Length: 195
Image (cartoon, rainbow, N blue to C red; front, side):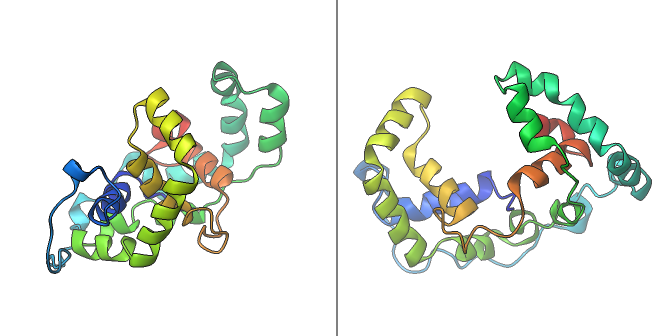
């Protein structure tokens, strides 16, 4: 599972905009290379590995409590309209993916310089696929923009980053449910992943 979000989405949205997908008035006029930024990775000091919920003891305790944590999320799920049958179907026997903890602070948007990150995400192939997706699903994007006031290019960018537009070979090998459940019960970002 990729935990890439805002930074990557903005990079792809920027790339789609440059490729002519955004409205004419919103397009940037760029010539030459735009991705020649210096390589200054995020300093180690800014990484929150020293958070109290990230100590080996806290992680081991949360891992042991994982089944109780999952069961305790039922009221939250119910309040959001999840049926008890559906909740049970997807959580029974669910085990934490402890490898995901290693990825929490090593996502490229946190560990690479902006230019390197953008170069990694924005490619001619991904832009072409983004154009294809926007055309193919235009009625859905129209309805989504109207209902949720979310820019279609940002949604398309997130779709491209997180799943390579649904390409099973580009989606990674981690279970989104298992990874999200792990992060909702273990580590420093539990509140974020529970919401």
